[in-house]
Image 1 (cartoon, helix red, strand yellow):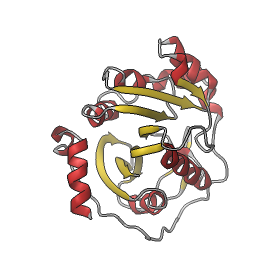
Image 2 (cartoon, one colour):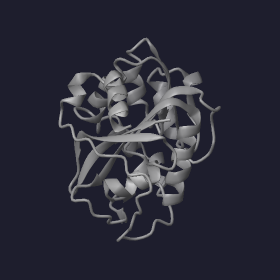
Image 3 (cartoon, helix red, strand yellow):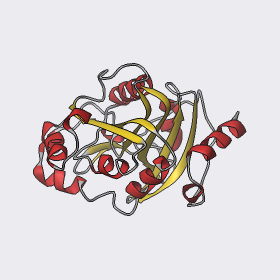
Length: 234
């Protein structure tokens, strides 16, 4: 099964991204997660209505995850959903590929208005909550999120992934930070609240909603976190 998935994934992703800091992790369906940190009780949302934060979203992925998402989708075609799209920088990047029809949504009307002001088609943008069902079943060939899901509560993460799986026909790609040394530190807070947990902890949730999963490194790094792409087959 693992060999079969790896062959499928190689067909989807160009060799350049596979050869860059590649680290495959085996599927761990049924793995139990133990959190050593605080319990998430509420997601911080006020920041998403800040003009300063909107400015940050325009820049933070340059040279790392934005290059990666462009490579991931460079050989794909079809309808794509950007979950929690912010001001739309990744929609702009992927729209260069004329074989893709890229849509996006975010909970913040401020961020969506910024995306519209950049010229992204209004009919491809929506103000919506990732924890609520907003799209038809299998409406998109592919979906993705970048640096978003870790800011949800555990209940929110489950709803996020359940809805992502429901509206996605083929593959869903999610980049998020995991603890570098594999510790489940739980819910932490700096400017935002977020989960700082191990890859295994995340896989125990992803495995509920997708049939097969592979994990590869991202170029993004934090203080004690390493970015990872969770490649999820419907």
